[in-house]
Image (cartoon, rainbow, N blue to C red; front, side, top):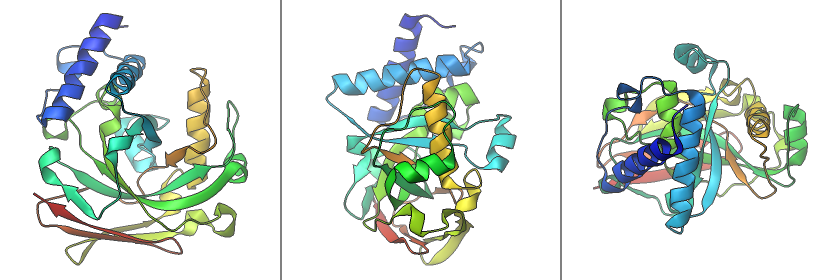
Length: 261
C-alpha cells in the first residue's frame, strides 16, 4: 500500500495533467506495486482536491460494465468514479481545447429517488428506488499517454472522467425494459456504433446495484437525488475538431453536439 503522501502527490499530478491538458506516463510505470485499493485512495485524493478548488460531485459513474471489457481487463467487477459539476455541459458544444484525446460513449443514467445502501442490493431494488432514467453521452479523456493504462491506473485517474451531456427526456424506469432499449451513435452522419441496455451487466439497473454494493465495502451509500451513469452501451469513439455527434435512444430521445476547437 502506498503512503498517504505518495497518494496525494500522484493525485496532484493527475489533476495537473487534466487542468493543463497534457499526457503523463501511467503511474504503474513508476509504481508497479500500485493496487486497485491504492487506485481508489488516489481517486479519493482527487475528490478532495476538487472540493478544495470549490467543485462539487455532479454524478457517479461506472466503467468497464460490459462483459467483454471485464474479460479484457481480467476483472470480475466494474470500476467507479466521479463526475464533477464543471464536467456537465448544458449546451451542444464540446471544446476540444480543454481536453487531451476525448472519446464519446452512449449510456443510460439513473436519478435516484431514495437512498440505496448495500450490501446485497439487487437490480429490482434499484428500479424501485429510482425516480427517472435519462440518456447520457459521456466524454472520457484519459490523462495517460495514448490511453495506455492498467486497472489501478485508470481507477486512480478517476476512470477517465471528463465531460458529460445529460438528455432532457426523463422516464420512469418501470415503464421500460431497459435491457432492450436500443441506442445508436453517429458521427458526421455515419453510424459508428449501436447497442442495447443489456450490454451493461445485462441490465443497467444491475450496474447501479453493483455500485451500491461496492461502495458499501467502504462504508458509503448512494443518496436520493444522485445521478448515476451506468456505463457504455456503445464503445468509446475518438472525437476530432468539427465532428457532429448524434445519439438516439429508443423512448428516451436524443442528444446532439458539435466538437469545437
